[in-house]
Amino acid sequence: MSEFKMTTLEEMEAATARLLETGEKVGADAWQLRVKRQTPHCKFGEQGICCRICSMGPCRITPKAPRGICGCDAHGIVGRNYLKFTAGGAATHSDHGREICHTLYVSSADGCYKVKDPEKLIRIAKEWGIETEGKDIYDLAHEVAETGLMEYGKPFGTQRFLKRAPESQQKLWEENELAPHAIDREISRSLHMTHMGCSSLPEALVKQSLRAGLSDGWGGSMMGTEFSDVLFGTPKPVDTEANLGVMVAENVNIVVHGHDPSLSEMICEYADDPEMIAYAKEMGAKGITVSGVCCTSNEVAMRRGIPMAGNFLQQENVVLTGACEAIVVDVQCIFPALGPLSKCFHTKFVTTSPIAQMPDSEFVRFSAETAAENAKAIVKMAIENFKNRKPELVHIPDMKQKATVGYSVEAIVKVLDGVTNSQVDETGTTKPLLDCITSGVIRGAVAMVGCNNPKIRPDYAHIELMKKCIENDIIIIASGCSAQAAAKAGLMDKAAKDLCGAGLKRVCELADIPPVLHMGSCVDISRMMVLAATLAKDAGLHISQLPVVGCAPEWMSEKAVSIGNYVIATGIDTFLGVDPYVAGSDQMAQLLTEGTRQWCEAAFTVETDIEKLVDLMIARIEEKRAALGI
Ligand code: MSK
Image (tube, rainbow, N blue to C red; front, side, top):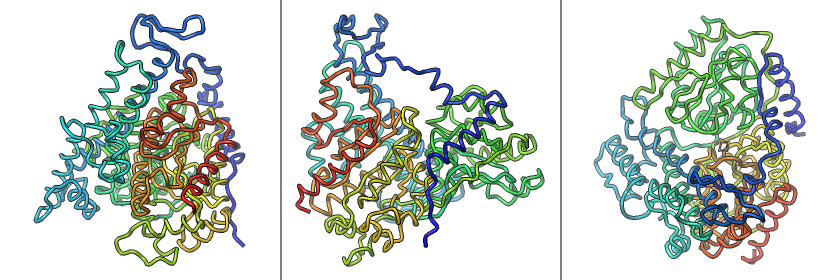
């Protein structure tokens, strides 16, 4: 008899309610309270029909005032807002990728950062036409990093990684002028187009959104992922745990939060240092526990097995435990609320990046050149803060699940090799996975991604959608906060195979995998693009023909919009549970939910009723199977 039991949403909510009681005692604010104060939201903003790109307004579109002062209609305003949203996300992911390029550039045999996956580095160098023969690995790393950095500003040509896509997709990109040029150029072109007096034609704005998105997914994000693997190792399956119960009351708790693994890797390194552990003991703790929130958590979980304390809407909860000595952040998805909240407790809120500076934080400027001393100083600060805990405020919910994480494309190809009767392919193709799909043992796959959003009961959509998909023999590949929702609920425990339909259950047993595969952080959605491209090439199909869809049921950030754009531009239909502020223009809504098919063979489906959303996804997968005759 399996002892597996999922953690229910009700149990997670009860744990949060208990933590909020502590918060109330110390006068802490909380996102749950701020949502109430901010509701109802501005209807103009919700529909995307408020324009403030010049100082003649702000203009708001109503039946009586159908055009702004410049004469722009609702379609142009919604379109510009949508493109600006996308550009913000593409800039953010891509700048993360740029930081990783810089980290690779300073790597050295005797420095803080080393090349942990030289084979991958050589593979990328060859892919980019860089001579590898007889070169010192660090000379090669620097050359590849510099070439990567040039992808941001090169004056001519398109992104190098586009060549990884099947020729059919590349052709669509070329024919429809979607192939992105230099990353920075696409972002600045987006901001140029949305300036007062430039584009107001929905088609042009949507096309540029796709192009800017592609510069992220097949440019900045892909470099972020690939070079993180080169530096810190390509993920392979590793066991970990998830949810707040991973924090340890007797230990110094350091929580890493954000996205860039350059910082968190160093923190983990020093938290493991015997000298630091001895120091923690000297200060009265039993040891040091590092756990993570958001995508930084995904990065260190999949490479080191560092436990995941929670996802986006749980970031305040880690402080509310009263047992967090330091919450150390780098960039993106960090609530400014952590500053004032940490002041209600003994917690140090440590910001580290000039990109993300916030009030009420201790700023330790982190750089790749001084990484070791920065990380050591932060770990010491946390240790020395242990004595300031207020024991009466400490409460860590007794709630965690086992999870196996770290399914990079390379790892998936490897584990699925033995599942079907196919010959194990020495070159590591996706043929065994394709055999599972063609035979119907697996009906298809869903790439589940994205955040939490208070508009949706936190984690409800992620968990319910995943459960229904796996019951229907649809495998889930998850990243970002969606992956953490799955892990917290127990869906990344291999024992969760019992929740699957017979076909997927068999695959899970044979391959020894959980039904929800953890593929990493937000930038790692680029891994999903590589997997889809490889599957399509191995099957001789267009990507759009694969029974594969994307889904972001609780998304909230600009990055998620950028991701959505590159996923559909890659030929993968994408299902959203939150409207991207386009309801104010039927032309924009039509373009995004149907019109983009003419350029990239995929489009969005927006459905805020989560039960309907999952049924639509399953129906789309079955339609694609029927069209292939499988
Ligand atoms: S952290 S972008 S809340 S997935 Fe990547 Fe989570 Fe969304 Fe941030």
